[in-house]
Length: 347
Image 1 (cartoon, rainbow, N blue to C red):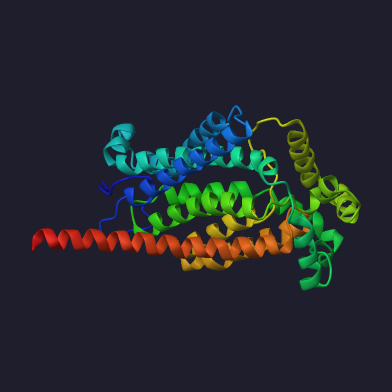
Image 2 (cartoon, rainbow, N blue to C red):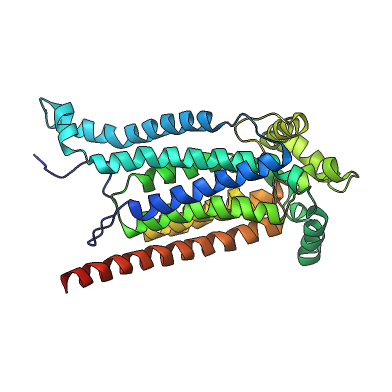
């Protein structure tokens, strides 16, 4: 009978004694700073909505349970094949409760961050009205010779429309995978990088370059600059049409709901997909090719469908790599500080 400790998974092991506090503490501070920023901005402009944080927490809890069941069920099946008489007792005995606690609380922290991001995105056009779209659209034309969406044949719009909606599922699956790892520098780096991407790029970047994106361009600025894109999406991209209608209705009526807020630069879809590729590449070289191929599909889909300008994805990718690098430096510096302190204590 195997005595190997359980959960949530042992995909990554590290000889050095890491702790989930390496990523959890700075991430919690970052989320607290996001809420403080939102409160300050909201108080100044008189926008204190009924936040969807509770809804995000409920979704995160359900998702964490589903993810845990996917990991646990094969283990239970193994017990059944071994004719284990007390599977639940054995399961509890082999459980790594620190990892489980980190897994559950980590998902809740993600939910809290999404609540703050939704609030801040809701306030964006009131604080800094959309201004960067004309410049971004012109830069795209200058660099590419045409609007980015025109570079891809119309018949490919439908496949990209389908692939694009898988983003949330893929990102969540990788979060489940990373959060279920035992403490390690790879896990700490991946989680810290995720919170930096969402917290810094998702707030600072979008406030610095306030933009709505091609699919909303004509509604925000008037005219028919992207009428061709709208017409093509109406025929070939039903998921885009559904999302555009929902977001514009919420934007126009100032309602507070999950997934609310319009912002294009930088693309958080592309940024978090780059995070997915970086994380999977760090966990297994075999996953590097498929992971970056998926990033490329989301990147292309972001401008083909008109959610973003071409430059939105470029900035998002560069920013994600920058956050990944920064996370590594912060984790390494902390580990070196701990080692020096331990050495000093011994001496």
